[in-house]
Every structure is written in C-alpha cells, then in structure tokens.
Length: 143
Image (cartoon, helix red, strand yellow):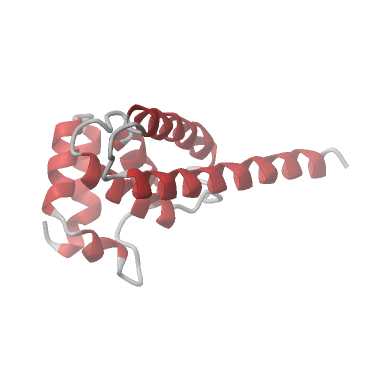
C-alpha cells in the first residue's frame, strides 16, 4: 500500500465488512507509517470504523489489534462532527470487549495485560469526556 493510498485501502477493506481482510491490511502496514505523520492520512470516519471492526474479535491476532486500537483511539477526535454521534456507542462496545478479554485472561500470565489496561484507560477517558461534553451541551441549550 502506497503512502498516499492508505485512506482508499482502508475504506475498501472496511466496506467489505470482512474482519479478516481488515486484519490482513493492518498486518501489511507498519503503524508508525500512518500514526507518526504530522498529517494523519486517515479520516476520523475511517478511524472510528477501524475501531468498530477490530473490536469485534479480540481473541485472534490480539497483539496486532490492540496496537492498532491504541493508535486509532489516540488519534480519534471525539468532537469531530462526522463521527461525534458514533464515538460513545463504538467505544462503549470496545470497552466491554476489552474488559471481557481482560477478565478471561486475568488468571493466566497474559502478555497483553499492560496494553489492555492502557487501552481501557484511554477509552474510559474519551467516554467520560464525551459524556461530560454532551451533558454540558444539553444544559447550555436549556438556558
């Protein structure tokens, strides 16, 4: 995938609604090539869609998915009007799935524990700030 075609490649994989295809694409692209750029080559719509699809199955390719989910959530702008109505539902589902895999593996020596905890913290922070923002907006409209 050429650098100027990331958005197109991810959009195509996401539209196929095939987690294997998306996972394959993620495995072919080095994370820093996307997320270390000053101008992020993926739109907010693509980021939230990647989060939604990758979070569906965290049992397989866990390390890679967690790495991608971490970078996508860190790059997410929850106030972007194109995704603002999707952020809380998508991240709430992600958080439930993260908590589930964390619980399932808590008795074992889980190599993903640190990443899981960090990602749960990031997601919780975004959800909390989103809930505060929406409550504030509702309150300020009533004035």
